[in-house]
Amino acid sequence: MSSRLIEIFDDPKLVNRIKTHLPYLFQLAELESSRAGKIGMEVGSLRERIIVALLIYKFGEANVETEIPITEPEVDVSLFGVPLSIKTITGKGFTGVKLIWTVDAQKAMEFRETYYPHCDILLVQINWNSIGGFYYIPLEAQKRLFGKMGKERYIKLPKLGTNPRGVEITKEALSGLVEDKMSRFIEIPWQKRKVNYNPYKRWIDYWREDKE
Image (cartoon, rainbow, N blue to C red):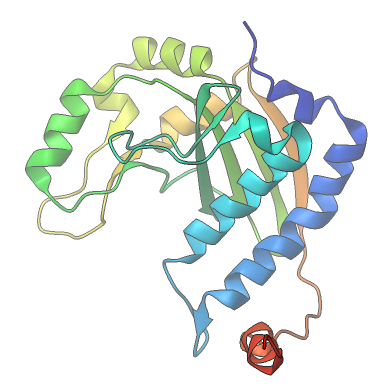
């Protein structure tokens, strides 16, 4: 059975909305998670919520399950009961996509030995002032490429003595996945807008409210 995610890519109005809205919303996420010009790690969670909100907008809240047990390391959300992983990368290349976050070398090795693709992927490639994309990578394509490449070529372990915080999909594997005949793609022009953003405004507004 094909994933309902395909409906996003076959909906011209929604495709246009993603092209125009996603860069702006991700820009807001960066502003909200920045301090002294540095973007914090929490930006990843904000980006994930933006994509989950897109799924709820398209498919309805009743069909999107967000309360996923922590025992599911890759799964971020469930759509119509089907597990889904949401991943984002920044730049023109396809590197740095984490399969699992860990700083433990032994756990990284164990993960590679037991890993097998088990959920669809929505991937957002952020490429400010240039072209990026919004990708759907189906589970079937992942399984096929994983079987063809093998775990050593598909999975990149962290280098010993470094602190990269996770196990990644290799550049070769991810490039193959986004180019797979089963994957879907929306080209996105990543242009920033002028935004008057005050991170304290909504909290100040709450303080001003008279709840008595």
